[in-house]
Image (cartoon, rainbow, N blue to C red; front, side):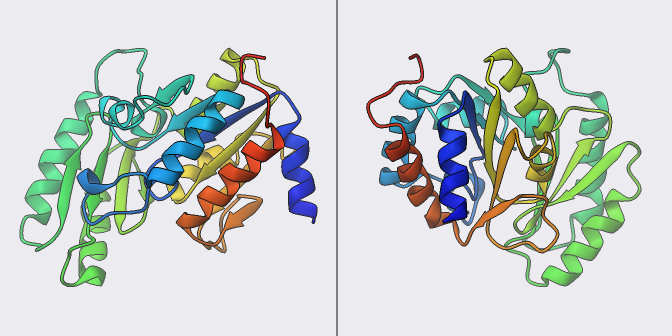
Length: 245
């Protein structure tokens, strides 16, 4: 099968594995705090990280995602869609103003939660009674914010500073620092599209979890549970090796 041949070619190269957390390593949960990797996924990812230089790039704040990956020998962790760690060392002031504006504008919408991540803002509408109304109100409120880049997610909308780094920037920075020639990136929503488009397909194997007609990813996993099958394939292709070899 062509996909397996391509995966084998990347696995045999000097490759960096980069992976998202929510919706990719862990199933989407009713609330962000409830998201956890399955036991088998954690075990497989731990074994894979021993054999491939691996990183995580998540939309979660850096301290949050780092805590969830304790015990897994990954080389680096990026939070806030690649915005953390930040060279400036502190969140942009404008993000705090966005949070205030959004909470005021959306306060009457039941089930809508504005999550302040410091370097970004995510508005969750998973529990909204009227999702269409919530989406329209969120986008209307976001349009009034200067310098905001608006990205869709899984029952969420994310706002990032337009001039700030993104997952694609973080991926290529890590690849250079770790002296890898190629990369495999796995993610599940629109915030991962920057990573999918960050390098030529000869150098980047991009995999999106779930269907998307407009994604720039080359390949798709049908559902989140298929991440275990992908990790097992990567493990099988490098049995008996380690990432330090």
